[in-house]
Length: 484
Image (tube, rainbow, N blue to C red; front, side):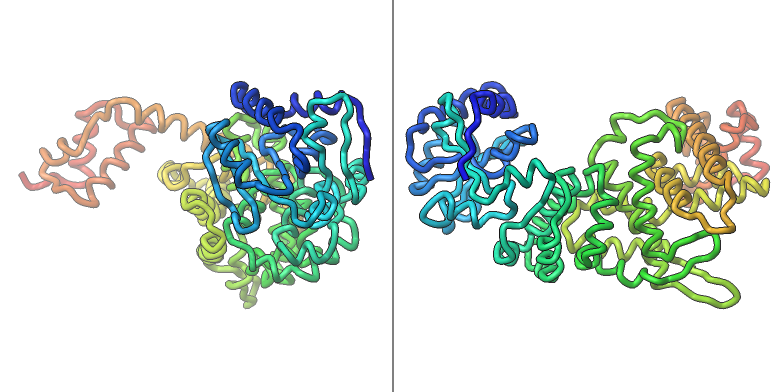
């Protein structure tokens, strides 16, 4: 099918080309230089973007022959880095900063044959390069991709194409996550039939698709669909054992459904932190690492319950936090997550029960400043932790759940956040005593040093000690005078 559009679509391409201005002009000059080259096309996401108004940060170009020669010229002309992705298949990349330009050879004798070997119909459209510089603007659309795009249908071109590159399964869900529409029935069937083949793909490629989905506003909805299609447990196998594990009456769902429900609530809280935590949304909360860490900590915070479940007088999951950390770490390392992101998520999972325990102590009147201070010290990510805790609570709606619990949790978050601010202000002030003072009192450096200094910091924060002399007398009285 050949679709004809007016020059407005051509102008739109140049507006959507999201490269630095000087590079953008060079790219346009390069394309103009080769506009009369036979069988040279704009393809893939670069064409799809004309109808969805996505910014074009990755340019897709396809040529029938001599692709290497064209790439070498482009590299010198544009001063981009050369990446030979798969030279034996005629696949090359030029990269600079966040932008890439992919060059591919025809897979087949004609552009139509090439397009039929791609993933989804809306990615199987092409525009002759010469049309970018003429009033006539033609779009080759042999598989009715434009129609599917307009109707919101994610349709695989063929089962064979999915088998050829099983990562296309995750790409399909990624397009769903970003609002391209519903995945049609046959395509979901292909995904289900070939789900095991996902693990044939390089872990780095799998991770990249997962990160795209996790950064989207529809992670829960996407993971839920993947779970219905039995795809989610192919990637996160330990989730399978959580299915059907019952929980105490604070909860209304089994462990697996509770984990997915917690993920749903992390998205809700990230959208509206003012309502759930009483804080304004900050730029930090819109950063990818912040969003991804909160969602993954929410999804896996109770994963260890499936492995620590016991029923005696009541249901228990002793030590489930530690097991959850180990299981998540094992999956994350296998998928090549960044170490600092793994460490952060493990910290959130490990400590996700502590705010609940501290709130319980507070309401019994036995919470100490030291316990609050220790939580702040152990978890540098207080906002992230309380988003996970609030999501955990919102995802628990059993008969024993108290209706005002989230409000109490929110108030406790503010109490801890104010304490954190106070501690940071205090730490910026000059300490009234140091380790040198303890040495002068006769104490030797060691674990007791840290204990004394932390004790003194709490006493000063509570304004029980206000001068150096008071502190020294307090130390002598409580810890004894060291040998001098």
